[in-house]
Length: 147
Image (cartoon, rainbow, N blue to C red; front, side):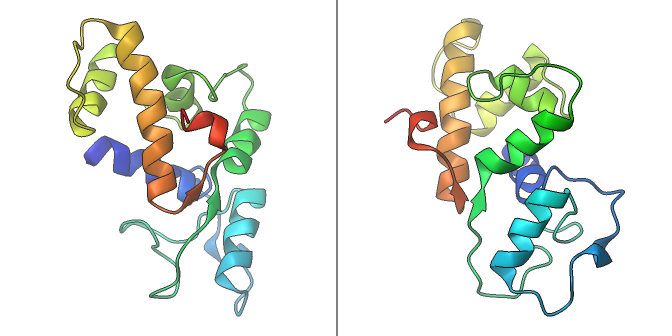
């Protein structure tokens, strides 16, 4: 799950702002508070590694995905509809949104449909990314989960 892990890390690390100083998060701050601070300030929770890098072991993360993405969208000069478009979601995260990359993401997430039908694939990708974010501890609004 290479490309999806990139998406997950960028969102769970408040947009993956590698340039921000890590000490902006107060020592001794609770993990939930650190996640909220990271989402609000754009400071990542940790460096490298997988989901949870920078958090204490055995602590589940509950990142408000919509809040993080809305925060990134507010700072972005482009009007990106991340709630409905996988292309815009990828752009918002600073990732390549080309058809080739989306096909790679589809393979990563085990899409079984026709990747040449990009409209159908894109809709599936968006729902699947949101579902996987929720599965991995992200708080995703129900209307974005396709329920």
